Image (cartoon, rainbow, N blue to C red; front, side, top):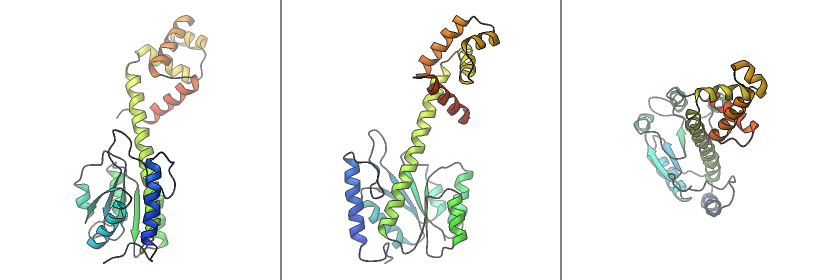
Length: 246
């Protein structure tokens, strides 16, 4: 049976990660050996594994289950593509050498399909150019087989934290778009000028309104966007420009 770890410390390292996971669930902060907590109302953290070796898939599943993580196993990249993107924080543990599309080519394919998910590569036949290509394309880690259980668990912790941050950002952007939609055309115009650094008097001159009217529109924009300060509103405007509605 394929071994995930490379020495007798396998169970000890999994136990340390499990202890870190318990601490995290009790309110501890994320650490290299701690995995993310399950937030209320969200799906459980999920690790997707793609490897054509059944024994390796099962060994990894057992490791992840030992620290309370849900796992889905796939024997090919095609099988994974047939699954809809996870609706909870997740990451992908991907073998480099696979029948058909290689792991590295699959990384490119996922990017082209806009299916964002942090990837941890593993291989028994890696080289430096291969690992450089993977990391430049955004991989979280590149682990050579056999690897220590703890190295894999640490990489998964980082990957899940990265995906959690990405999802949080997307939620924030969606909220900003919802707020922006309730602004009137005039309020959006004022917001554009305010976040460009113009004073009320300058805005009034540019759009043909009285200064007091601009001030009222500005106050309405701050209230509807739920901005606590001008700096907060500028940050929101930048985020909306960076993530326009498709």
